[in-house]
Every structure is written in structure tokens, then in C-alpha cells.
Image (cartoon, rainbow over all chains, first blue to last red; front, side):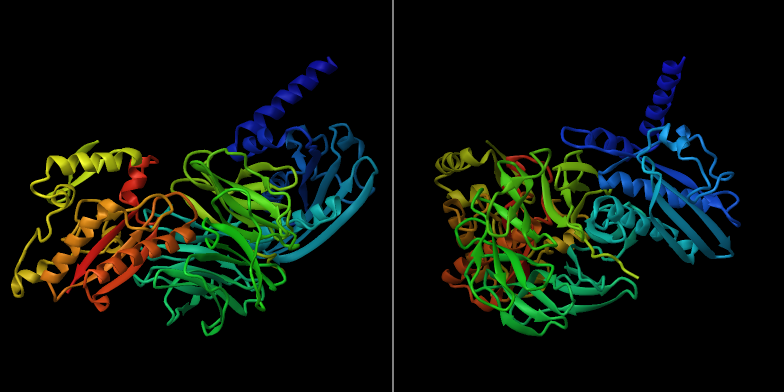
Length: 439
Length: 190
């Protein structure tokens, strides 16, 4: 009797997790592998303290929090169908509910909370419990507008990761990418990491490429919107932007420093593409490279002091690093004969890049001193254009593993591709991952 | 290795990269009397106003750039213009021997039409990073410009632009398609 009810429970669990949302099914299938351990976590509904009678805010908060926890690669969400307790009749803080109800469904962790809504104003409290220890680990209270509930969920997910892993989660941030979803033209879009709040930054029927964030959450990108390539520094909040061109030649690409003060621009003249340091208005400060070949894909380190870039000075495209202050460039990659698109890890210790192997590309990381290159994507489709999360545990990259190119999330430590971050028609490429949005 | 008609009177050898040069030699041999270049490319001056020095005919001499064509959904539809494309090996920007005659014919046409300017567009195949390919396309465009200048065309008449891998003529993931996309395209204006 006991065994059969457990089986029924398992069957219900499998049916629920596999059917409603394919991205979640993917997470389940791909995360579980050798060496990975997923902690079972229960995210209980928020107790309605007034104004959330249809539990709309509770559902939105729980859904985004659950999705972010799955994307983190650390947790397995226990289906709410398995929950014994009724969140609306029991309490939400220590001493107001029974841990046995959660231990019996094998939850390691439990999220409970409450919400009160007055007009457009939301007061929301969420708490994290260690079920085995019967202990409160962390709590957050939020006040804000109804439209800010998704960010409350992401900030709680980030704090939950800090409480359980020691490092703040990366979800209160933004993803920028290039997409042809609107037709045949490449336009730049922004969205949350968990796929909400799609925002179209560019709307010109030409070519828009290489979005890059500074920590003010401005976006630098390259566009052919005037039929000639130029860089643009856009503020998504105001939709204002500055056009950046150079009398030296044509813009090929660029990066903006974390503080937003400097731009490293790849500028082509007479066939040679070199890097130049500009101020944010486009005034040239210094030449950074001087070869007759190709120097592209500049990327600032997190402290703004170093630049990684791609150069063909050795005869093949390889990754180099140099000091923004000047001085020589040092070659980082020696394995492979086509290595491009570098990105510094936030701690400055690693560089992620794409490397060609025959007809396809993989995302690799290498020590900034050139040590221990590691293939993270193992030849499934073509994987390109790595972008680190602000906490340094994840890389967003573009991949053709399921046909069209989409943006995927990779957990670096386990070399596990967790989930697609974009979907739908069109091809998505050139991801950029912003710093935390902050207060 | 079948020569297939492309555009207005244009011919292109469709085969894989290895056989391409051999095929070209065969075609050259077959058409030795009339010259190799005319058999593998469009006849210079096709279209209105061929040979006319000035006047109404010349208003039709130009052709639209690839980005303008792309905006209208016409890219790859066969509107090639009076000058012929040249092609490159993967990740290379040196002029291939078989394109020597194409560039000479292009230079002759430009000499015969001194009131025109040309923009050389560099293009790449889909492989590799977007940014590296824009720089590579710029190298390809510059290679053709430099060659045209050595053939006597004034540098002031020649501009360059790179579209990297952004404006392909075809989108199949095959060597044939990649070879077709690795090109310099020549856009004539007055």
C-alpha cells in the first residue's frame, strides 16, 4: 500500500514536470549526470495576507523563483502536487508550521512567505528554511509595485543561492542578444535571464551586432543602420543613444569598460583592423594595436584594467591579452588554429572563447596565463560567443544544438548545458550578460 | 562541376573547392578561343548603355549594393551588376589565380566608364565569429581594391565596405554555398 502510493506520487511528479514546459523537461534530463547532485527544494505558495485572493502574485513569484532555481543547476523543484500542507491555512514563519510535512516529501530546503497587496503596492516576505535542521536560513522583505514582483523573485533567488552556496546568484540581471525573430534582419533584444520582459532595443531593417553592457546598463552595439557601420551607445531606459564613428576608418566592433568611461573599438583602415581606446563620446585616447592584419573582439576585464582580443598576427586567429594602460600583448591560446571572441571571467582568472574544430565551434575556457584549456561544449552543434554571468558560475552562449541558433546556459563547474534561454522562430546570437541590476 | 547560368548572362562553376580550379582549367581549354574570363563570368557591360561614354544610357549602369538589396529582400536574386564577383578560400584574402582575369575585365570596364565609381564589398561564409569575419571581409575588399589600383584605376574611384558573414547569397551549410558566399562583390555608381 505504502509502496504503491509512492509510485503514484512519482508518476504524478514525472507527468507534471515533463508536460507543461519543455524547457523544464530539458533541465531535468540534462542536469542529472555523473558528479552532479541536485538538492530537492519546495517552493510553497505565499500566504495571502490581503489583496492576493486569486493568488496571482503568489503564482508569479513562485513560478519565476522556481524557474531561476532550476536554471541555477543546484536544485530539483518538488512538485506542489506533492505538498501536504496548505499554505493559506498554516503559518509561514518558524513555529507556525510543521517541518514534518516537508521532511516527509524529502525536501532539503523550503521556501515560504506571505504577500499583502494594497492597490498597486505589494508587500512581500519570503523565507528560506533548512528542513533537516528545522532552521531559518535567510529571509527577505520587499515592497514595491505589482510590476516589480518578477524582480523580487529574482532577487530572492540570488539571495537563496548566496545562503546555500556562498555566492550570490546571477538572476537579477539582463541578457542582450541579436535575433532575427522579427524577420530577416538582425535586431538587438533584451530580456531577463529567465526569459521574461522581452525588450526590443533596435528597430532598423539592416544589421545590428555585438551588444555589450557597462555597469550603468547602457548597451554598446554595432549597426549598419545608416548603411555604414558605426558604434552606438544606447540607454535602454531613455531610448537615447550616441553614435560613435572615427575619422581613422570604419567601425568593426567594440567593447565598453565596466564603468562606462572607455570604449575599445576595432577600426578598419586600408584593410587592416586595429584596436583603439576611445572615450565614451568617441574621442580617440590611444592606439592599442598596430598590425597590418586583424585585431578584433576586444573585451574588458571586470576591473577594467585588461583587454582580451582576437588577433591573426601569428598567422591564425588567436586570443591575446594586454593592459588597457598600454604595453605589449601576450598570447593566451596555442591549442587550435581558429580561436576568437574572448570574454574575461568576472574574477579575471579565466578567458572563455570559441574555437573551431573542423566544421563546428566549441566554447572553451583557458587560464588567463594560457594554462589548461578546457572544452565546455563537446561538439554538440556549433557553440559560439561566450558571455559570463556576473557571479562567474555560468556562461551564456549561442548554439545550433537544436537546429536554429539560440542562447543557452552553461554551468561552468560541471560543464553542463542547463537550458535554452531563448526560443522561437529566428536565430539568436551574440549574447551579453549584464552586471546585477542593483537597487 | 556543372557551369550553371546565374544572373544576366553570368556563369558560375558549381563544384567543391578542390575540383574548382581543375574545372576552371577544363572550361578554359574548351573556350580557349574566346578567352577564359568570358566563360566563367558575366560579360562586362551587360545591361543598358554598354559602351556608351555618356548620356541617358549611363543612368542605368549602376547596381544596388548588397545591403540595399537585402533590405528589399532581393539579395541573391541575380542582380549582379556590370562587374563580376571574385571568390576566396576559407579564412583567406589573397586573390586566387583564376580571378586575375576577372579583375582585369572589371578594370577594363571601369576604364571604359570613367565617370563611374565602384564600391568593393567583402563577404565571408557563415563559419567563424561575426566580428572576425567583418575584419576578414574588409581584407578581401582591400585586396581587390589594391589589385584594381595596380591595373591603373584611380584609388579615389574605389571605396570598400565589409559585410562579414551577414549578407550571404545562399544559406545552405555546404562547401558549395560557403564558396559562393566568400566573395568580393562590385557595386557601380556614378
